Amino acid sequence: MQFTSEQRLDDGVLERDFTLGDIPGILWTPAPAPASAPASASASAPVPLILLGHPGGLDRMRPRLAARARHSAAEGFASATVELPGSGDRPRSAAAEQARADLHRVLKAGESVSDDIVDRLVLPLVDKAVPEWQAALDALLSLPGIDGPVGFSGGVISIGVRLAVVEPRIAAAALFAGSYVPRAMFEEAGRVTVPLHVLLQWDDEGNDRQAALDLFDAFGSKEKTLNANMGGHTGVPQYAGEAAARFFTRHLKS
Image: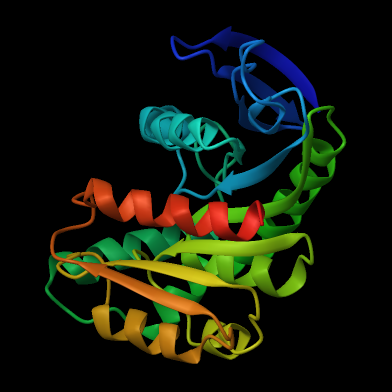
């Protein structure tokens, strides 16, 4: 991991861009606590880490990711994210581009999205992205000031499902049900055991609501909460984000 730039935001959060091989990423760490603050609030002690999932395109997503990270920093968490395969300036996959074109074609025609298109679009992404997230986690947890436990927050939900299954350092996950889910992921969901907080926008035009509900039902976790709100994909109410923050405080700081 190599840091390429850094800046101190107006609330004191340190934002650093990095590269992990050829993969770009961003790390946010809380501001140092004032000398008068109690020891428990000091950011000089190692802090838990939240991995911020997103649909790809760090430049486009950066303002929203930074807002999430700053909110988490106020709660005493570091946050980090990496660019997804085939997004941003990373090399494109011809197969993924064809699957994406097929998706747009059927949506424009008002047709149902087939399992074949979803499989071709999502499964190769999960297979490649999850080891990259794990490599980033190795590097991030080796940094001074960052420690476990680790949470995963956001989407792509299939990436979050796979990580929760294969990565023992993930202690809790807050997943955004806002993307297509291959049928094969439902079997994997049954092997998820970490506490889950699933956010569903009820009127999300780009999401299959019933599939999201079926996936929630398939999760094997003993503790799982569904937070469903009216509104579209980008209409997540502020209180829903606050509920997710309380979820991580409960499971990463207990």
